[in-house]
Image 1 (spheres, rainbow, N blue to C red):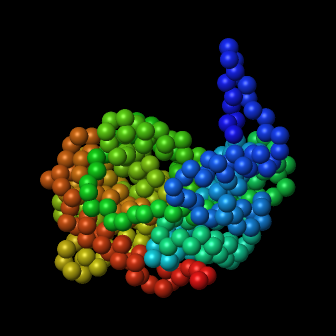
Image 2: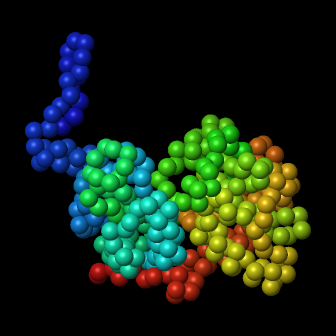
Amino acid sequence: MASLEVESGSGTKVHVFSSSSELLESLHEKWGSVKKQPYPAMYSSVYGGIILDPAMMVIPIDDHMVHRGHGVFDTAIILDGHLYELDVHLDRFLRSASKARIASPFPCSTLRSILIQLAAASKCKKGTLRYWLSAGPGNFLLSPAGCPTSAFYAVVIDEDFSQRKEGVKVITSTIPMKSPMFATMKNVNYLPNVLSVMEAEDQGAFASIWIDEEGYIAEGPNVNVAFISQDKELILPIFDKILSGRTALRLLQLAPKLIEQGRLKSVKTGNLTVEEAKGAAEMMYVGSTLPILPIVMWDEQPIGDGKVGELTMALSDLLWDDMVAGPATLRIPVPYEE
């Protein structure tokens, strides 16, 4: 049933749902037209359990994460039936929550157990697991003092991803980046990130690069950025003003293998000016589902020879192999029920 009925004449008549069953029927009609359910399972501490019906995957409108942006989030990859780097992402998640002054309703061990059980209930073998801590529902005020308890939400997103082997174009963003306090906290206030991506898309680019107030390279809208210098050095911007991406940190741990092979000279973090960065031999985004995305052009200027770099793909191989067959400490098998 349509929720908006057009009257003959000048106005519209908004439909009033007479019961929850009527509303649920309407929601089921909407989801019934979807060929493949993209969200096979959700957890809500408000409901107190796992939800498999997409029509019920909602959060309260008076949740402070909705109307005040008072929430933090993080993610983990599901690949070949394993959760990759869940524990390090959970650690960052709780650090973000502490900075946002949100107390978790559960200890870390319980959050971890919920997420593993959610992945199992979803039956998803490849996708992403995203989760949020909110100040919780309660009212529409600024202060969360009136919220009875914080809230924990999580959802499994069934999505296909693979190594990215084609290069993309980027631009320098004109959207102001977040201050270090908020940039280093993975919070839900992503309007600058959204606007920077839209700005790039308007110019036919994939995404953008932020430059900090001192003129140094910062990060992409939701990914880190890395460079291979002309001297074959892998350089990532220092993490003091940007989010310390877990994939970027893992890259710094794995990349020395290329030094051992004589392919890289060094691996480091440091400040890079725009001129130095644009003069790099290779450039790439680094993020969870990429894990490496080659960048071949920046502000209509080619990076290196304008082609996907050999070392970029070698680093991508290192990360992808780690995701597929890395240490057991990083890959948690999901206990699916047969």
